[in-house]
Figure: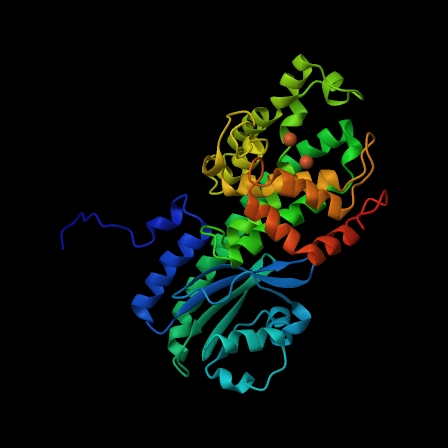
Length: 381
Ligand SMILES: [Fe+2]
Ligand SMILES: [Fe+2]
């Protein structure tokens, strides 16, 4: 062999700006070169607030488990390996055939016969679960696990990296946001609700097969939706807090909050060295374009229909629905029926009709969100 040899690094894509899902797909291909029987590699994210595991990123032939959430109490065997910080090999999943737990039934119903599960940690904090699955039984060999454990550590590091970057960005923006809400405290639980409406709409569209709406995308949409009005921090108090109607000049200044939001995001991401953060565009779109309307008469860029990114169209519907059904100093809370009627009126001209439709079709889930994050003023009945 020559003294100096240049090669294409096998894992160089892991340093790219690709999403975590894309990186996982790349790793899956590498794993299959050694272990062709690994048909699925998936990471489920731990949601501390709900004590649940939710599907997050995966690489599989036919994405069998998506948009799925499982309470930890319904997955006792996963709870056990989490507590013991142990990995678990199940080489024949028919042992779970008669299991009554939701999670086991779900995995088995997708035809997987063998599974190797690894709990993921950031220091001592449990962050999720990694699964290697196979359609064949008894294929995982003891000696293979050493290599799979190395891949697991690599995926664990990628997860930590991703979660820390996201947390740093979201944390910084939330700090800015709390400055806005000190100035403009009228919002109550608006942000909590609208982020959940946005997730509800996105999941429903994803289930209908809307392209691009992966679990990872939807999770980021949920995290970033509350930042839509971050640009209001740049609006002078005499306009932002004016009790009466804004005059034409003031209205023009108020409208600059969307482009100011985009600038603030660029600046903060720059300060944190996260300009190449893979979902920065999602955040920029939510903040910069949430007042665009599909008839091209919105602001700041008068974008039309498909020119407006789907994340922005989703956030617009969620934001407007919550504004309508919330109490404000100048209006009572509208009923859901009245708000739906108004959304229907705007559907197709201002708002994306599919986003409006799926929100209305999911009224029970809407009511659950309203009950959990109500403002105790007015009613949504
Ligand atoms: Fe706004
Ligand atoms: Fe809003």
